[in-house]
Length: 168
Image 1 (tube, one colour):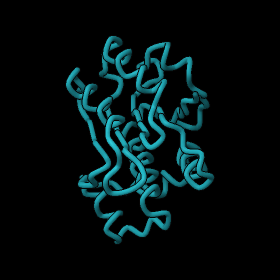
Image 2 (cartoon, rainbow, N blue to C red; image 1 turned 45 degrees about the vertical axis):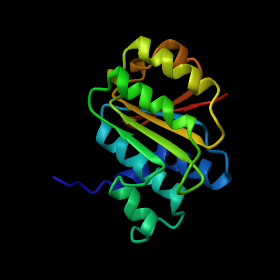
Image 3 (cartoon, rainbow, N blue to C red; image 1 turned 180 degrees about the vertical axis):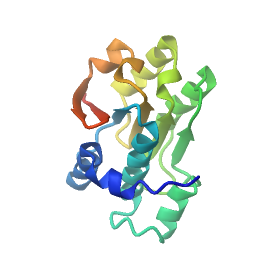
Image 4 (tube, rainbow, N blue to C red; image 1 turned 30 degrees about the vertical axis):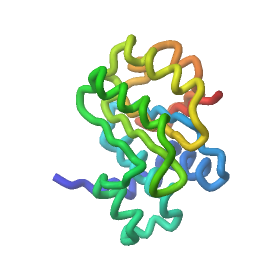
């Protein structure tokens, strides 16, 4: 079943914050969206990621189609129960230069399934990220992130979406 979350997304402060950061050129290296409504959180992330490649969000240009079809060379998607191999691939996003745009992106749905040990492996990358690498982590609760990850974040609650922007 395909659900159009457009109306919901545009009302969310997380979406507005992401678009504001993109528009201002102040995109953080890592975002955590924690909500029991993970489908809405994921839709917010995908809309924001699309805006990185097509500010008009036209939905028809090659960049929009690549993001929608999950075929963009610079965006790696991870979903479901994330295993150690997935975390290693998420970390590897930071190791390469972009090939089809200005950014390398990792979108990790199901971040709440990542073990504390694997989150620690990711933390080093989050602490010293390359300028063009950005991570979008989606979980059902903020407690899914280990304290060392949470302690580096700004957290605010808006409706059912809990939005956290990691800062250096």
